[in-house]
Image (tube, rainbow, N blue to C red; front, side, top):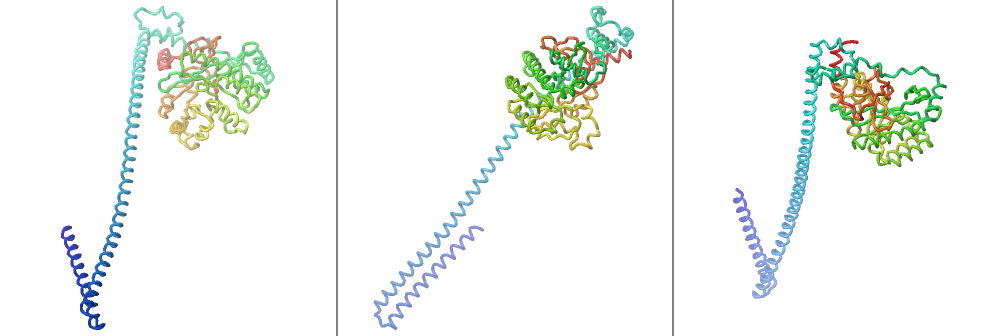
Length: 489
């Protein structure tokens, strides 16, 4: 069909060319005839004039056709150029899309490999936990069958007296049972009520005589329960070696202007502890609580800043912790001092969280990298209606801005299971370990059995003082099974 159209076009061009030629001949002949008949010019001259006119018409027709062809060719070339440019753009777009697809495939492959490695690690950890659970259940059954609950109050200091045919796991369970039955021997006596004047005198005496103790409470990864950080909790001792917790002395020390000296001494001790811990584990970190009045006092802050500047190399592992109320009421001085600390590489943590109305972008811009929320607050269903985000989505939201969520005050296995559904990566609480005092050389955490009293804010719960290694033992359900087997009392 296309060839037929092209043939018709050629025939039409030929017909029009022949018609134009005939017309030019007729015009030239007519001109010569008019000159011969009207003007009286001879036939030869009339023929010459006619030929001249014919030649002129032929030249004019050729030039006009050439110009028209040049215009058509120019238009075609322009169309071809536009088509080539469009084709080049389409090729570039396809190349860009292909590169994006390849990048997504590479990232998906790497993410898949990372997820596989994480799943393999979790499966290995679950295998270990299942083995421990099987041993615990077997020991639990053996104790029930042999009537161990009646002998549970026996001292745990003689595990070698166990029968030779008894498995080691049963001996360990008996130790746990005995420790659970007799914790009152190592728990501190409750502090007596004091007046403000007595507390102030005790605080001044403790500061002057350097009776400031550091207790460490571990923060573990979930669900692996491996120690990742320690929180340094401050205790003061009076002249009778009675303990003053943070809740007892902070307000009095702030009113008396002593909190700056206390914070500086605590920072010094925390840095010493961190250096000793990093000899064994480079990935460990220490959280150090700092009062808002210290941050707002230029004199106290300058002293602390000079010390932190001298220990700037420890900044990635040394986290400064502030209260949520302080962050919500920052003044110009506090904002400037926080910026100075962040400029030197120090990271911040927020504790004493009372609600989940959190602005992660603003906190991340200020250098906050950790937020500690009580487990009870995260699991409280009433927070769903009072906060802007569901608690189960809080960890993902904070993670987008580089902030890790830490669930604190965890006291039961049920809370751990629920928090894992919320994708919480770190946990802290008496379930894992209570705050434990340092050894005299300040190289390790010490402590004993968890106290019976509920966990207090900022680690102010009572603890024991029996030495243990730095690495807190991984908490499992063995102790709970043993306590159930021992029964009440």
